[in-house]
Image 1 (spheres, rainbow, N blue to C red):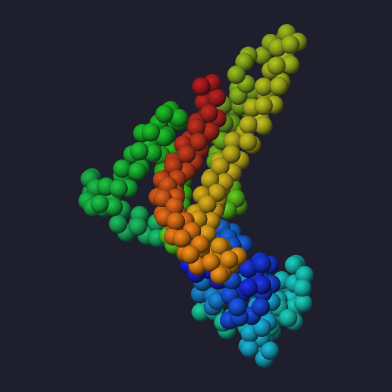
Image 2 (tube, one colour; image 1 turned 90 degrees about the vertical axis):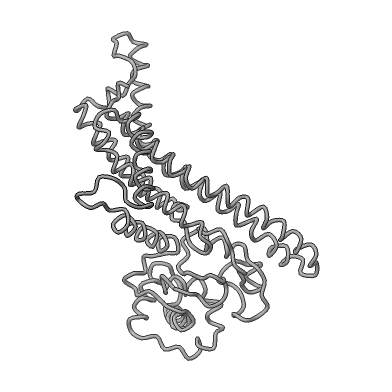
Length: 363
């Protein structure tokens, strides 16, 4: 998720107890790093730029109301809330899966909807803070490629800066990633690997924009990128090597010597296990690197607020630490820009290496 907190505020009780358990909005305010971390680095059901105040966009009304029911129940609108039949059905379905009082949740949903700038309908409630902003990033990437980077049928050279930039990236992927690792039909694999690189780069960079979200800090999103690589490894392995593909992965030849047979079977088991481990590594390393980097940024960017909450009578301390921590956060932000490119490159590189090793296991 984005790593630049605004004045992320919540109630004093939330500052000690976490999200959804504080006094009403507008009471004594403190700072909750738990709530800030949840809404920036995890799948929070709303876009709430100043946390603990009016949300800009509620993505999943039922989930948001459930997480913030304590605060919403203290709003004046909660007492007179009259949920309609559609809202009550949504509340009943949600409480059936997650527990709770459907009647109270329905009233909280009405209060939350009236308190927000906008709310997505139930049909789009599958969005969370991460997937919403990643969808925006991918739409912008698609428009850029289709509008600015698309060539005319009679065009043989790049005509603008965007076309030059995209062509440079694609040639880099082809020459430095695909060709060294997939020796046959490298040009046919370039669109897939280049697409992986550009999509991951767009998601990584988009998440560094203040208040936006990084989809690649979610293990579910990175797994969704790794699964197609895993399927391609299997399909291409059997397609190019026949039914005996798993046996060709073993780096030694079969021998009837008892000790050699034991070694061969052990190596076969290791190679089969590695077919599952390799795409898992793709998903975990991208998720872990992005989440860790964003969490470190968030800690330094919010250190002054944390100290202010614990020592409100020491303005010199929290002001000085806050200033120093923001300077450190700027340095980490520059590092995260580099990490965004490196992680997209590493994912694309390993995908090509893993697919190439299945196509040509003898190499």
